[in-house]
Image (cartoon, rainbow, N blue to C red; front, side, top):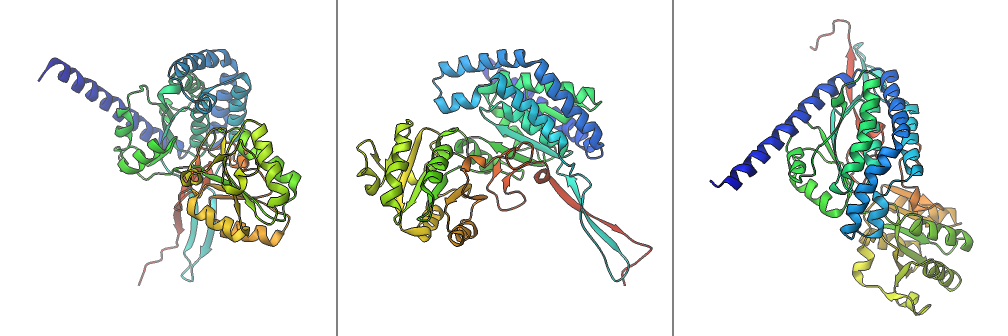
Amino acid sequence: MSTAEDMAEDVAADLQRQMLALGAAARAAAALLARTPTAAKNLALGAAAAAMRDGAAAILAANATDMAAAELRDLSPALLDRLLLTPDRIEAMAGGLEAVAELTDPVGNIMSEWQRPNGLRIARVRVPLGVIGIIYESRPNVTADAGALCLKSGNAAILRGGSESFHSSRAIHACLLAGLRAAGLPDGAIQLVPTTDRAAVGMMLTMPQHIDIIVPRGGRGLIERVQTESRIPVIAHLDGNCHVYVDGSADLEMARQISLNAKLRRTGICGAAETLLVDSHCAASHLAPLVADLLDAGCEVRGDGNTQRLDQRVVAALDSDWRTEYLDRIIAVKVVNGVDAAIAHIETYGSHHTDCIIADDVAVAERFLAEVDSAIVLHNASTQFADGGEFGMGAEIGISTNRLHARGPVGVEQLTSYKYVVHGQGQTRP
């Protein structure tokens, strides 16, 4: 065997030892966190928020290092926006930690209880999932959100951030560690994988003895890899191909405001609208101003024939456009024949993430909300509200399109399971 091969084996073996050590520390911390009082968890979160504000300059410096490297790699504007930290975004992260601290602690909550004819008293009680592995890409704020949510829900976290945000995530993680230490909790409660080596991801996916749940947050390539390779249950979504449907009963001014916000407030988030559907019954009055608003705001419009005829700036839509999550200033626009056609289009092309109807007709809106099979459905509100913080959850680890366990924003409650606690007085089964 060559010297290079020997060195590669040594590196792989060293990484394996590191990952197993992280797993063992997380498992030990999870046992402690499951019985940690709410006050201690809240103290840790408050101290972490204070450390984040005090360390804002160090976080910004670390982020500047990541941003410089990302610009050299010619990342898209949407990805650069995901990576960028500003004083306001750091304050939002600190505020998010405090918001999670204010949430009701789900651990130990009695979900239901009943008594059997034989006198047995049975309760279904919330408990932590255990150790949660979170694998994410360019968003450094996930380090704070994921760490906080796992801690509040009594879970230990192993965080594997993307190489793009490596320095930013380390600076944020240092604040979380300061919070844990202030509360007398172990460093193993929130750990950050200390390498950008992609092999660490594969190792996480094959550590069921140490990790109970994997949550990937990133692009399709990452999600598909995790879902294919993981030997651990996964909470994930593939795409955020979100729709805004403007019904024939929609108020035009409301439709204009919501459509612009849903697409352009932040194009790089999974709740950004990617397709605008307009009812043929209002196309004569609504389609032109809706399309003009988007074009004038610098958004590329890829439209069907009806839409192309409105403005020479509209690009012809391909069938692939109806399936695309652009995460950019691009939107597909189509005229459909009423709510039935809108629902059928979303079922055919959508990703079951977030879809919205703009309508004054309540009966039509209720049909849409009942029949669109997405994790989040909205009536007369922007798809950009697809966010755990906006749902009052303090923060989120992600938006799940799973149908088992968690669906929609994944917050503290969704990071718990339950067990049955049974009290008897000497009963035996005949």
